Image (cartoon, helix red, strand yellow):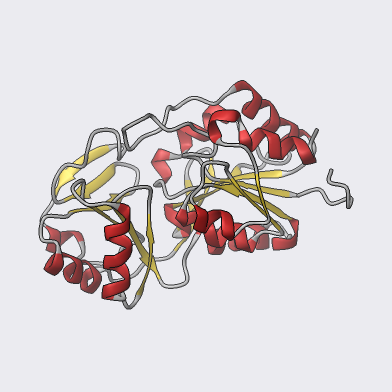
Length: 276
């Protein structure tokens, strides 16, 4: 519990770069939870807090992390999980999607392809993997990969589209997104040349807002910890938003505090402040 007597009733945790350490030089993280992090999460659970994973990952890429953490809901309730940067909210186990936002991604995808015709495009195929126009670098996506023509990828409503170009930088994609405006979509640039497109108004914050409403709580009850550009809205939404030590400056600027890096168990250090 902090010095002002506040203790979070909801703990929103990013996964990659927050709970899991990055593999150097790869677009993936080690699928293992450090003992101190696991212990701190369970202290929060034992204190009655709802621990909610909030990630850009698709649902099938998050259930294994919930298992590694041995997450549990209150009483016999299943846990809440915010996936696909807020476009999908589900309960687990088993996976039951309870809220989903979709949009027409066609115009945005075509605008990007007109500038960068060689980009990789992927759309989640829930429960299976991804449909994509060409293979992504190893380890970046989970599940089955189904090669599909781009026009077929965006023929109907989708909850999220991933744009990737291994030859570009994150800064290149920030500039591209600003240049195109991407009307009708939200966008977030990841750790590299990785662009997530989602419905307007959808973010981890909107997904978490849905969850806390179902729990009869509010953002004033929430602690959020993250490290990426896609965490900014979540960190601003929560009563207390904390950036991981290795986060880039725009993320740090959006937060109330900064903890140690993921390599120093920064998430555990923050949780121990409230559930010591």
